[in-house]
Amino acid sequence: MVKFQMKSAKLIVAFLIFGAFIALIESNLKAKEMGSLLFLLSFWVVPIEGCIALVAVAELSKGSWILPVKKELLSVYPLLLFISFLFILMGPQLNIYPWAGQQGIWLNKWFFMARNFILLLLAYIVSRKFAAESNTGGKRKNFYAVLYLLIFVTSQSMAAFDWVMPLAYPWISSLFGGYFFIESVYSGMALSGLLYFFLFRQSRKEISDELKKGLTDISTLTFSFGFLWAGFFYAQYLTIWYGNIPEETIFIVKRVLFSPFRELSYLTLLILFFIPFIILLSRRAKKNPYIVFVTSTLILTGIFLERFLFLAPDLSINIPVLILEFFLMAFLFVAVIMNKDLFLSESVK
Image (spheres, rainbow, N blue to C red):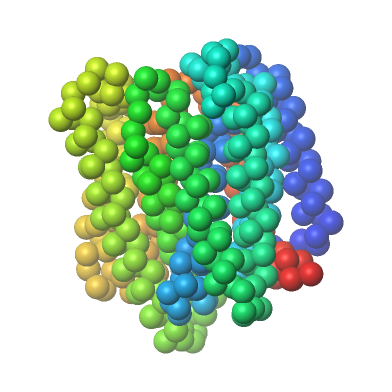
């Protein structure tokens, strides 16, 4: 893996500068263009929380395949704190939701901000504790693994029910929360596939049996989770189809009957399920780091496109701003992984 070493002070400065820059951009957007921040948050919370959840699941199930990439996956926990404070910037933008201005306890701007900020902050605090315990083999690592998974499921469900679903009001789906946290773990597996690829390139001369077995295991799990994702996708679509209720079907109609969302919907389904299924059906493909790399990249691209499909039909998104903010987050994501030892050693203190 290419070295990209930074000192803690430089990383903290990068976090502060990028955060301030995103805040400056968002504060100057017109009301009709306020969608890029929600897109940024709803996408990046998926792989960040999913990476840590995958390690928690592996720790509880004693999966040895996680060991070569465990530090990299755990090292992303500081980004949860960054996202927590980025979420505060959503406060002035809550008018994008149809419920804004209505009376009610649950649909209250202050309560909306408080419950989601607290969940994100709890996810950061518990993930930091879990990273420290898991990295040092502490006795309480299973306790923090279970605790994190509970918060993870709740946080992802709230992202589904609070952040995304209200945009398509009056459409509702009780499966949406489960769909989100399953997809989050799916993204964690895809990132693990990318990390294994770089480990193989780094160990080109001597590839250990542990790496070979780990790659096969993560490929098999990715293949299996592709089925699970497709199951949730189909179950959600099926209930809307046979119910045939106008306020529910409008969500599907907007995304499958009109261009360019129709073509994007088919493309998303193709690269999130059908292509990975066909590729990883082969045992030989599961052992090939290059094929796993391409498949993993496709899965993450599919999740990105899917987030666009969830938001764009009901929300105006400033594309140049989205691209800029996305690459700022991508830089930080890569930076924390490349400096994994720095963050994991800090979490022990």
